[in-house]
Image 1: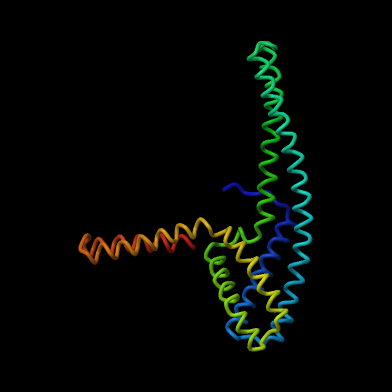
Image 2: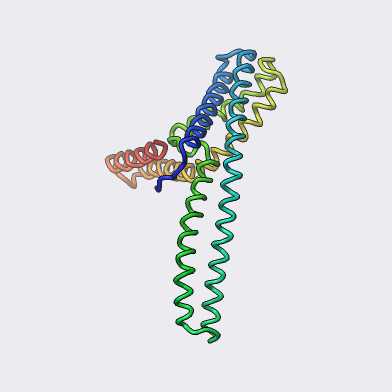
Length: 234
């Protein structure tokens, strides 16, 4: 995978955002496990939310500027590609000679190549800025996702018992659901692979029980599938 050339300020910004997002999810996990009082949770959660908003505001400004630059460069690229197509068509119908096409194509090819590289770099930077959790290890994001799901499941009971009020519960639920949507986009492909490997393990067990494969074959194939499963989330 190609390294994305982000400046040090942006790298630090994304690092701070990831840090506070992780702390906030771990805090929600503590609430779900009843290892923090509602009062202390509200105080710390509010602090984390303020910091995340502050960093996100800066990130949004960077995204807006980068997207504007990308759209401008991409528009220029599309125009040069249109011009190249127009030249090709005019040559094919005999309006302009092939020598002129070759000369002008050389000029356009340089511009198209340069802009293609620039738009590709800008797109990669945008992707980095928009996917804050993208640089984390899959195992870590998977654990955070499970923590977020467990926290959502506990909210209704926590509100009913008065550990947190209904207003805070609604804010936390909305926040966690937004976070889960982000994790879904990160884990979609890996989740499909995970499901296939678990189906493979179940199928192997059935084949072994009906006598289709020997115990040694079953154990070998099972260990291979389990190793792939472990590697998937590492």
